[in-house]
Length: 283
Ligand code: LIP
Image (cartoon, rainbow, N blue to C red; front, side, top):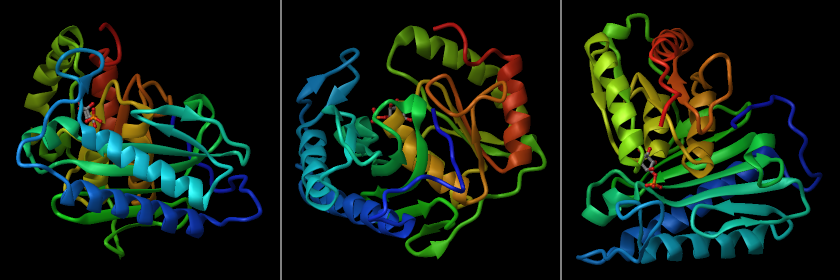
């Protein structure tokens, strides 16, 4: 569950700017590893929820690098990573890391995959989080979005803001789909109803990038059901600090049930349609 606070509780030894800078360094370092180390033919190392929900050796290597760097820089902080799960801390801060968001794209060599690094106030349980700072490094095009609460969002150091959306029929909307065929059938049903009411849809395969493209105006809106905390955390604060509403349905927070992001008026209109379609129900 993703929430933001303009007055977060921080340990005495760190500022939002410090955390933002560290998130950027972590994302760039892991991005350099993934960029340099991609073999001509990537192999599947293991699978998770089913045989198309895959993990590569580079997912593991990238997360190990991120964990080593966090242990060196912030040894008392907790960590929640996609591949190794939760590691406890004592500082009240948790680093939320996706070592490669867009793993299937990485496997195939499709250019949309990123390193996603966020830091939240709260323990590794997403129910209690307030997102403080984050960085998303797009590996192939070497672009990095960063944000810190109250500090705005940037792309490669240049401030970014969302596109205003006054007419849903002219909105370019990003979305994504789960790995379970029954969930995908539900998501296809929702998309079939939505598609005639928007400009067009883009399915890029990495939520962190989708959310950052909303922040920099390369997408107007984004929605997806079923996101994991590590897919969502860093991109959510980048979009939030770029002026996006980032939330769920029925006035709820963004999270696994649904995430909607974009300029407030457009996000509200999209949210209303998704509520009418019961887009967060069924499989
Ligand atoms: C991906 C998400 C994406 C979703 C994909 C996949 P992963 O995360 O970022 O939004 O549509 O199905 O879940 O598995 O590549 O880290």
